[in-house]
Length: 359
Image (cartoon, rainbow, N blue to C red; front, top):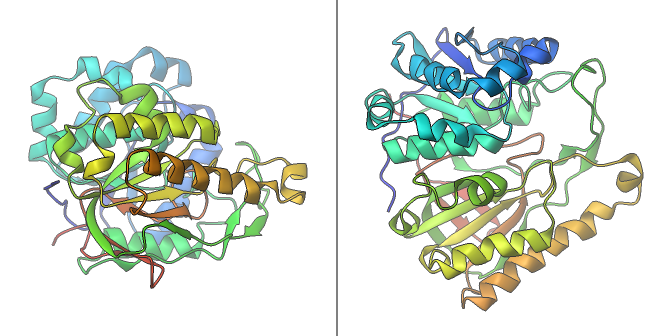
């Protein structure tokens, strides 16, 4: 089972470092980055500082995975930095891995602190997992915390509960709506439209289960990390609850079947206690697609795909919660790696039974 070191809680006035570990979007869309930076500082009364190359151009960030790794080590080793927040995801974080030595993993292990991000940042989360520390699958500066019109209260309350409090996090709330309109970076004045939530779906088994959280963006897990030294040993999935989401590239339910079968044939599905699956495809929908409410039927294809694969491997009684509010959607909750989670299908609750941080 996972046994990870928890970082210390954030406090008012703490310094939070921002890092660009995949795509250099912060250097290209500085207005969007600054909007997220200022909204995060204002909502949580902290001070954001940039790592040396956070605002480098996308071309520079791409050409220098060594800069990215250097920034990550700088943030972990700097005693003034109490948390690390990624600016945005991307698609090539895995290029940091060949540059990493045992010393890099030792630095992370000996300097545990809050590390946050989503999407391709999944790769960095698993670097930290290999180093033995708990991190946080969360919004990032430019997606979520930079939401036009301000950070949704749903996210502010969850962030405070997860990062600033040492009390058990408790039942995760369902958002009553999600932001459905795609507005490009550079259009920070446009307030995006919302659609009512279709509510979380409790499918599969109906028994209450508990397990420690592990997971991330399926695109990164299976297309980038599978077969590398970062993909965990099977024992990491023992009695775990796996959380998965899909990126804005919207891989279809057929692709998701292939990914889940990788877990099945490798014996990982046999080790799990439950699965949490996010609202698929994020909120990147066309206006016509939204008007026709086609996403509702699209969501059901993923539910069917999950149940199909679980049945193929004799795990049809495993509890599964789908269409959840994390990953490529706004608003979203934060999921801490290694924290004990309970799925109660009868009560229709997902509860985090521990704190994510320590004193």
